[in-house]
Image (cartoon, rainbow, N blue to C red; front, side, top):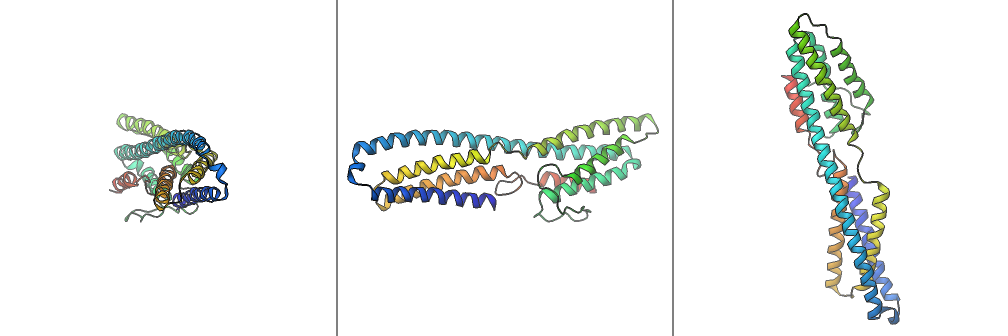
Length: 264
């Protein structure tokens, strides 16, 4: 919803700028609309358009790169949870309470990150009321820390179990690194101030378009197409910054597959 609202607001701002440019042309006298004056306006407009197109393409590229990194980090986090569960399973009955906590942690991550999706049957989900959708959640952080302490407290009775316990500790450390990578992915590459400045530049561009176009229906249609196109680009940028929502949100499939494997 946030990204859709932002796109509509952006479209309204550009439309208002273009309409104001058209109205302003009607208020100006003919001496201000000579061919030489319009040519100067076109030169400045072309400069603004080139600069805005370059910045928009760089912004889209940065946001897409950050989204792809968040997608890879989430899948790596899911793989780490699966590896730790397999290691604890190999340890035996002594690690079953830790596996239950790990399953509860995984279910909590799924329920808090994708709250609108139906919960998986046959799995006990923790209370996710008030949990953060992105970033570090204190309750989930405390749970994964407790899992780490329990793994460190394993008391293997023989060499085989000692080796498995050491493998589980190493797997847990890697899982923590992947978890913090997911937490840091919440910080998007585009600041609201930068987006506001970019919006101001584009408003100036469409204001100048409104000054230049003739009052013909075809010209108005072409101008409207340009506004919709640029608004769509801003919608994509805003949507990609919302990693776990919107049209391009990261899927929960990998995490749900891991949880299903833990329940078997």
